[in-house]
Length: 552
Image (tube, rainbow, N blue to C red):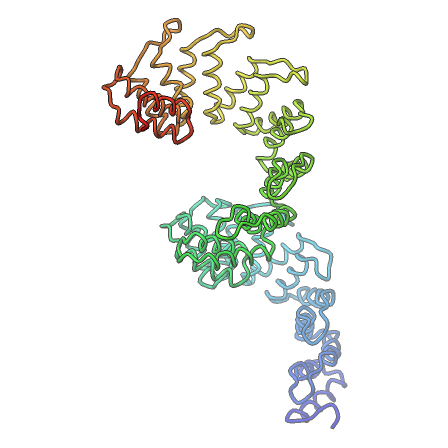
């Protein structure tokens, strides 16, 4: 039957004859039939032959079709370099907005040509000027990242808005992110929600996820966990891993959806399998603690390693802690603990330096390394870690005989003050104790008034220990330091200490109400307080209950 057959065979024969005579438009028409398979067998290679003939005769339609075929890899092998060649010729002759955009994209990605962001930006601008608004979006990304142009977040936001107003969905999402973060525009969560909604209506996965997060937290609008779950579901169905993770958490906790542990765990597993290290870590925590699933230390350890191998520093820290303590089926291994914590520190984890100090300074570490512990505690304290500043102060207050390091109480006091400024109520307790006991060798006199000041500060910060000590000081007073006896204040601080969880305060209040000297005798209250303390294991409270006959 030959090459041509069917309804269009006669037409195809005529076009082929004309094309052989050099008719460029006939060659283009014949190529279209070959591409569509109308009246001829579909044949991309033959179509390219005729299109190339026409393009070399300066036929712009042929150039365009060739560039499209090479870009898409439809009917012929994908060839970005060939696409670049023909798009360059088209744009050199004026070109359409789409042709400028396609060539810009190739320069932007470095496909078929050496990557050149400056040239990409120039071409995107020409395409945008001609009304191709996806080009405005991509140009905005270049301005946002400072690629090929000076970084300009304001210009980026303007370009996103231009494209978004012309129904470019990714641009609407990017503009929303600008409003959410205050990048290039004044931060405005209400505007962020508006533009996220425009993109989410088109089921843009990232917009659905980001809008869901705002709804879950009630930022920019009223909190609505149910709607958040719906949006996470849309994004998760498209393979958006963080949405799977968030939706899994909602199902586990029954937030915005009916609690469904199996569905929640399934979503966590799917997110972990998709490479989300946070999901793997959280699954590990559930397996370790036995929450929502059977306790499985081996699985927990596997998941922690999986998350750590993907760079999740919380997992590195967890492995460091478990190695140091010998938990989760692991033997205690300080070297392994230090390795994981060092990796976490190098990856920027804020907890790791302080934990390294704890490992080096622990009695479990052999040999204990005072110098290394101080180094890591100091680094963490300099970064604002109050707990590390506390540890550092304790080290200097006690010294280390094995390392031949003498105590340095003045330095410890300075460090406790720094820890207090960082929010450590325990530092206030220590400062009060130092002044209450004094230290003649360090030149620190006994000064209960100074103790009162520090303990009051700690108590106001929520330290039950400080509140208890303050209550004791008020009850006893100190005439040498000018602290008067104030039983009412003492009762107030013991009561506050009890509210904050102090067991010694319960014992003290129980004894006080039984004696009936400061307050009317009330054995019912006394027994209530002492029982509470005894049940918490306080031996003094147990002895007092026996003494007062509160036990049969």
